[in-house]
Structures are given as structure tokens and as C-alpha cells.
Image (cartoon, rainbow, N blue to C red):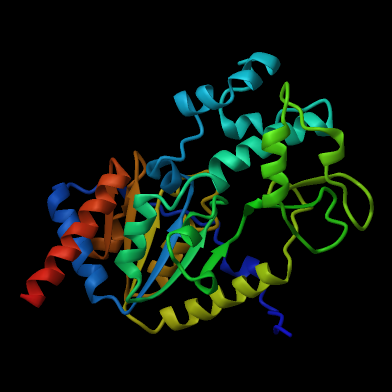
Length: 318
């Protein structure tokens, strides 16, 4: 039987933003070289990934990818409400059949059908020889697909592959992969058959996606164990030379990754921060050379960082 962690997740959060943000005036090529040197010298690497990471990898929720795949939903419910995949998920669908018609397609497109994407594969290559850990608010399973150990991932906000009781009547989640594949094959006019609509096996009520969007989000045993492993990693990190590799974390949920990473930087002079972000790559000026904020195309930046480290490794082996 697995030992249950008693760690309180809230101890890892921070709501204190920096007061001295600046965009760095450093040439891109120099930023990549410095970032590569920091990762190479690091004993530990903590990855913090937000929605911007998956968007940069190709899992965009708006634009043509949305309109091409959800045209019948947009036509049925109206473009005023169906503006992107995220907003569409909060549409007040009239029936459970229509709700699961949408969410099964959403999950197939963003969780089950995509392979491990190059950005995530290169991230794995960057850190696989290090003592690493992944903290992510993404729910698309890309880190798992790319080869990261499940024991080194804490997905705080859920998983598109699982469902739970809508009212969280019991602390258990359910694998929905087979169900979603059946739904995807049976969907007609944006609906799934009534006999496919899942019901809670305990209270008999409705089920919902395992996504943190209200007070009923289920934090099951595995979730708490991952939180405990994250806490253990942070304790070690405080005593080692480490890099905080932050990817695509904006100000939608900054208290989980962005602000806590900045707090770690303020508390520990042995850490460095690599912030990859489109338009929000500013870093606290007080961190000096310990922080690098790389603006622009994250997929390109991760690829360039990977190639820089690969080149250095090849040079050593010649």
C-alpha cells in the first residue's frame, strides 16, 4: 500500500508578484548560450510549464485548428460563444449528451490523438541526465508521452484523459480513454448516445472532466503523492545548484508556477531562472545574471537550446 502524503498543496503557492520586472536587452544568441551553460552546470532542474508551452508545441486552442475541427459545434451553438476550445468548454450545453459530445472530441484532439510533440521530446533530452522534476498546469499528457517519468511529474490541474463525479462526492478519478474513443465514433449532430453518458458509480449523479474549475475538483491519492514528491524535490533543490526552467506561464494562474519560482529565486541564491514566454518574458531586474527571459517563438528557442547543448556535448566527445 502506498504511503499517503500529508503535505498541504497550498504551501507551494505564492501570490506575491515581483515589483521590478524588466525586458532584458541581451541578444538572442547570447541568451541561448548563457541558458545552455546554466543547464549544463546545474545539478537539478525544475520545469514549470503552462499553457504557452503546449500552444508553442502545436496544441493551439484557437484559430484554424479550432474552426477546422469544431465547425459543426460553431454552427450549432454560434460563433459568439464558440470562440476557441477553452471558452467552448464552458458553454451551458443543454444536455449531458451534448456536453460529452463536445468534451470527448476536445479530449481526443488534445490528449489522445497527438503523439509526443518535438518541443516536449527536446525538453526531455535537455534534462534526462539531470535530477529533474516537472510541475505543470497542462492537462494534455505531453510530458508523459515524451518520456518523462511519471514519478517526476505533478500535473496540478487534472488530466483530459480522466473524469470524476461532478460534485466530487468521493475522491476517485476514472480513466475515460476507451469511453472517449467510443463516443468519438458514435457522435452525431454534436451529441453522443444516451447510453454512453457516464454516471457517478457512488451517488448516481453526473460526471465531469477531471479539470480544476471549481471546488469539486478531486485530489485523489496519486495527486497527493505527486504533491509530496514535488515537496521533497523542493527541499533538495534548496541546497543544490539548480535551474528553474519556466515555459509559457503567464498571468492566468501565476500563483502556481510563475510567482512561486520568483519566490524561490529570492530565497535561494543558488538558483537560476530561465523564462521562455511569448510577450511576457520579463524577469525581475534584481535577479541580475541569474535570470534569463527569452521572448518569442518558444519552439525555436527550445530547439536552439537543445542544439547548443548537443553541440557542446559533441565537442567534448571529439
